[in-house]
Length: 81
View 1 (tube, rainbow, N blue to C red):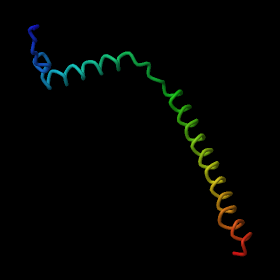
View 2 (cartoon, rainbow, N blue to C red):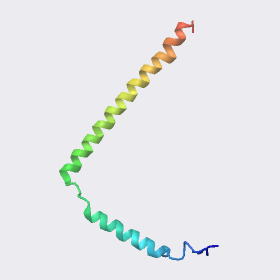
View 3 (cartoon, rainbow, N blue to C red):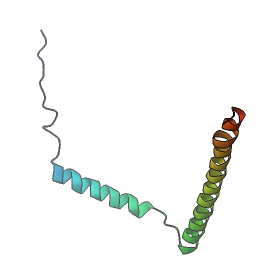
View 4 (tube, one colour):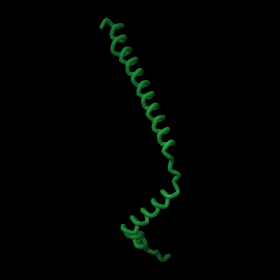
């Protein structure tokens, strides 16, 4: 029979504080690589998002109004309600 090597998978694993520090260092390294938008780009993107959300809200409002007319008023009137 072959000799089985029993290994402890947690034996070589670094401790929690070491992993937290490593994670923090990795995050800081990645944040230094980020290209941050300038003020004009941020304002432009904010306005685009506001307009898009208002447009989407208008579409949902119209769909809700139409479905309410169809389901609550027109269909029951077909059956004498």
